[in-house]
Length: 139
Image 1: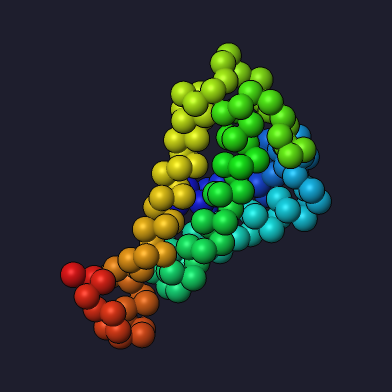
Image 2 (image 1 turned 90 degrees about the vertical axis):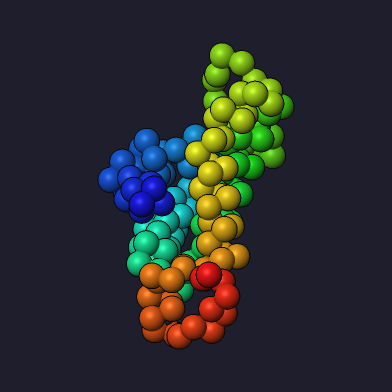
């Protein structure tokens, strides 16, 4: 649900969450990038929510989260702009600040990795439509 909500916000609030945010961070082609990321978040989030193509849907979300951490959290770790990505103003920088600021990103990344490894589970459409191949995964 978090991915779906974040994706929708990129379209509803482009200055804060989409194009404007991508521009301020320094992401190349911000209009294209924001719309692409928002679209993937909504579509893949919906697929995961219903358990359809769960493993495949988790891959773009993993890439998005890794890129989000690199572009917005790694600069916080070192306290400097890096690789063309801007550093937002915080009270302090370093490891503890980066961990604090990245807690949601890390949870979403780890959750997506889990879904890639384990699949949608016993109540997923994947299992209902494609059968019990790999049934040991759902035990």
